Length: 274
Image (cartoon, rainbow, N blue to C red; front, top):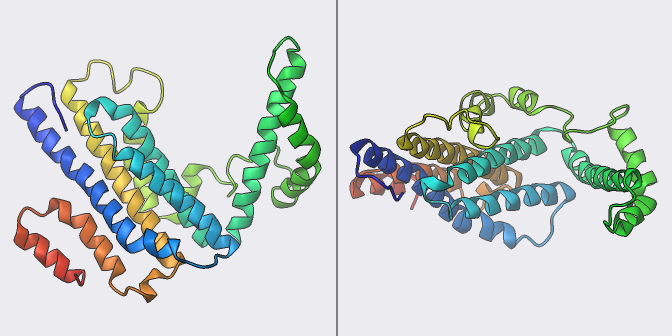
């Protein structure tokens, strides 16, 4: 990562951060070769698989955005994407573990659209001078409110605002899933949260080198989250049936950026059946 000073601490921090950034690239290359190309060729998908696929595509899109952010000046955006990747990994795992979770996840998407439409219409009614064209929102409400409200009542009875389709807070989701999500939520997730919200904590009176370290923390969280998302996809789509070494190759993709010699990389390749 480019640095404005030649200070030794900055150089060391940059070198360390570069390793984690390279780890993101390594997993992305693995993903493109071993995962995405296989999923793209599936002829038909169940509703459950389609829900997993949508979550996976969002994960991959976030990774591709993250790879464009390779300087410490992007620390806030890097931290935001890392947090999003963690939450997507949690969602992906929940979709795998909660029976018929895809029903709740897809219903929640409709509930959220209706909530937004009602919010805009209510604001317009309270402020008639506002010039916003609300026709599209009113049409959505007229055509879908009764159906979506009935769905919400059947899935989340008595809940006025469904914060998450699982009905759980993020803390409870991670505690329910246990390792590694509970530890990631307790240690990695909050460590970069200061850089995703307004405020001076983590910003005021902090030396420049600290922001390079924060980038490393964020890349590390992104990598661990991405790994969990990929493992879920491998299980859900049963990719190991066509490639018995796929999880070994995922492990090699995780480790190769930290190999210091060609010999070490070759050992990892052999262990992965390459």
